[in-house]
Amino acid sequence: AYDGQWDVPTLDEIIALVKRREQETGRRIGLYPETKHPSHFRALGLPLEERLVATLAKAGYDGADDPVFIQSFEVDNLKRLNAMTELPLIQLMASVAGPPDQPGVTYAAMSTPEGLAEIALYADGVGLEKAMVIPRTADGRLAAPTRIVADAHAAGLKVHAWTFRRENYFLPAEFKAGDSPVAVGKVGAEIKAFLATGIDGLFSDNVAEAVAAVR
Image (cartoon, rainbow, N blue to C red; front, side, top):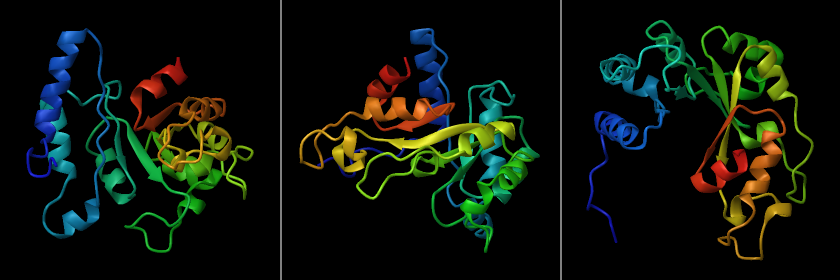
């Protein structure tokens, strides 16, 4: 019903919104942009990194303590950014496949202690698919946590997990409510289970529930 009614906001417009809300609320509000398919766009002559860094710097975001994380599933993109900005960088990883710009490399190999030590040479943290932190059993319940949070911390990396959603379809079996896949389950309980592993941050489609669980 809403298709075509609004434009996609630019990064400049998002930054302006953040600055305005900071003034209205007195709170510090962060940004967490992701570079989507950066090697593809660089090959097309549309590099993302230089423009992203320039846009953020113009708005006053250029230091290691500024409230910005830049994330990417690719590797060379982050290495390039590491030479261009002091802003924290996050290597995204999934439980399958590998970085699109590194043929033959898997995220599984990158998640070993040796792989995490390599990531720490160019990034400040890892953004992990939830299953890499706590896998699920055959019946869909949470299994025992892996060692990846401890290993990442040992390498000096922060750990952010993605993505927590409240609908039954996305939840472990023990946190579902009823039988409908779209019914709202106990996402706060799931988040608390992940917080117990020592993760430093998380992504959620349901901000109120996530904030309540963290507090």
